[in-house]
Image 1 (cartoon, rainbow, N blue to C red):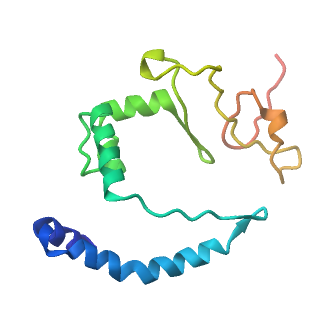
Image 2 (cartoon, rainbow, N blue to C red; image 1 turned 180 degrees about the vertical axis):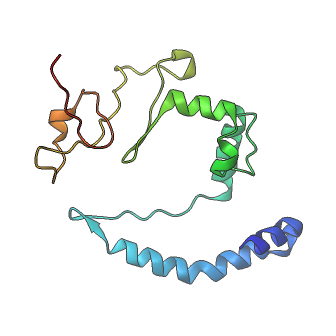
Length: 157
């Protein structure tokens, strides 16, 4: 893949990309057909087509505006974790735990268009019930500060 990508970058007018895309079409259809047959809680898995080159360029344009110091050719974690503006954006807008990755607007109204209703809070992390075999229902943990890992007993002071 890396060799094909490099060859295409050096020779963009040879139609390598189109030939590569065409050669993968049967594999893509086979994988799509397998996923289409899957269900989760009696709901079929939704299979989406990949983004077009035009959609990717629009996304890159937005990223260049939002994170001007990020090199968009190096989006691996080893490179992005060194970009201060990206790390600051993650700290303001994201919550990442072992079980959940969430993105939401921060509290700074200069950062986005304010919504008509109040911003929702972060979703709680899954918490085990007393048996340790199941998670507590959302109705019991909603609005509470949760934590990752085993439940810790607190001693009365």
